[in-house]
Length: 194
Image (cartoon, rainbow, N blue to C red):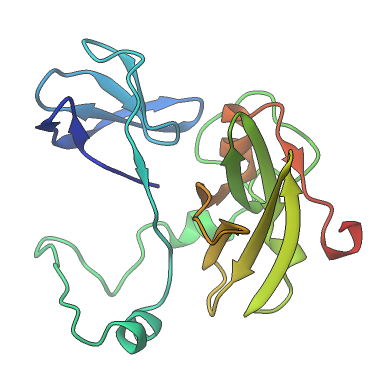
């Protein structure tokens, strides 16, 4: 998830609080100390409680794919990070959650990856396992809005647009996180259910 850091004409800077809310990371803004839900993009306590950040379009892709599309790009690297090793490799490969997440919606395994999308007040989850190959485009409907969901070259490269081509807010995440924030979410039945 990517959000604009601007609020009321000010640019906020954020840090990781070390806390979890509904099993998801909590950020804090350095200006007020307000706590922010990473998944909801909203302040959950402090001066800005109830305020919402504007979500920006984003995607997860490979460096090779990005370079083909934007060969003049530059990259900012953090000198203190080791990019050759993934510190969460064991977590990604395990079916267990790192912390107790409480009751879980049992329609999918807790760590099933989904593309979660929101249109208006309606939420829908698309299990990545229902997209067996890359470079697929699926049509669907969220409420009365017809949408196109496309999968790019990588396992997490998903984009959703409405029929006018406007991006629909969405991101790839674990089912337990998505369903905690969107308990009334619809669940896509796969291509056969279209």
